[in-house]
Image 1: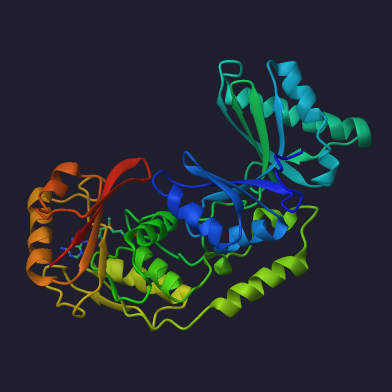
Image 2 (image 1 turned 30 degrees about the horizontal axis):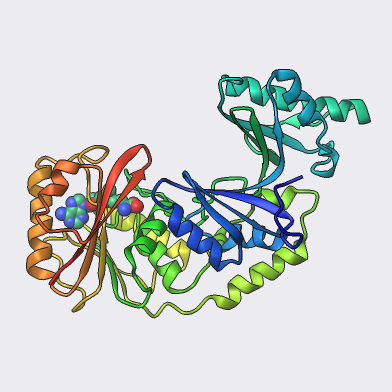
Length: 381
Ligand SMILES: C[S@@+](CC[C@H](N)C(=O)[O-])C[C@H]1O[C@@H](n2cnc3c(N)ncnc32)[C@H](O)[C@@H]1O
């Protein structure tokens, strides 16, 4: 039923991500043994088996969710959509007592209303159960056992099951957050994009709730991001193989190493330090990450050279009285004090970024939620 190209790879998957992280995600998918990897817009497609799907959920740092394709079909009208969905052997995917929900995305002139597409899909599934068993499964929007995704582009419809359930940015270690935290996925993506090798010292001088230093610690200690999670969507699937999942958990535990790379973090705000401490403790790194309450401008160099990644206020969600002057100060301080370092800054404030006054050696466009950002790398000589 899915788009197979080989018999050894029974499943076709789509891993969703954020704009700008597609290549990093494709590289990660290669690392877990995915095949026929293709870069799409805000997503990467690949093939693999059930073990690949479990690994994707356990190990991918830059995937938002992993969808398993169950059927592609043509539909020119509502009747055809209903018929095609009705024909899917839903009894192979869920029990009658289980709950489900349908998310729909449409980019089609034939089906303009995504809510309507979701409703038709739900009706067809429910009617199939009712016809066969005289009963129907219920919808649960909050905590469904099965999340179904349908995507229609033109006359092509693609149906998927969401193997992740809740978004994979919910790693499970974050206990609290400051005002404008980075998504764990974006933070991991920024670190992987920066070219940091996981061994060179790492420093986030504006750490907020600690997302960047925690994700850096996970990378440096080879800790799988999925190890903290209590559940994944596929746990309630009919074909869930607990033994196979346990194997993946064991593999993740075996590959974990002690954190030996120096990771430094600081912030000017006492509340940020409190929240960071809590999150670092929850992730198991409270004794490893060197955390200090100090302003970036006053912080002494933590070591001779290393990688610095910072997410300063943009004057959008976190306000700053003199944002242009603040970015100039950041640039001057980097220039004068951080010789031999590689520094990366992310910001949605394009004007302020110019005031950093350093020539970027790399530039990437990223999105921090809805905010379009520049992520720039500087080699400081
Ligand atoms: C956008 S937030 C960082 C969010 C963080 N990346 C996270 O994921 O939670 C910016 C942080 O910069 C801190 N900050 C502002 N000015 C600073 C300065 N001069 N020195 C150090 N930290 C500063 C703020 O207290 C705030 O926590």
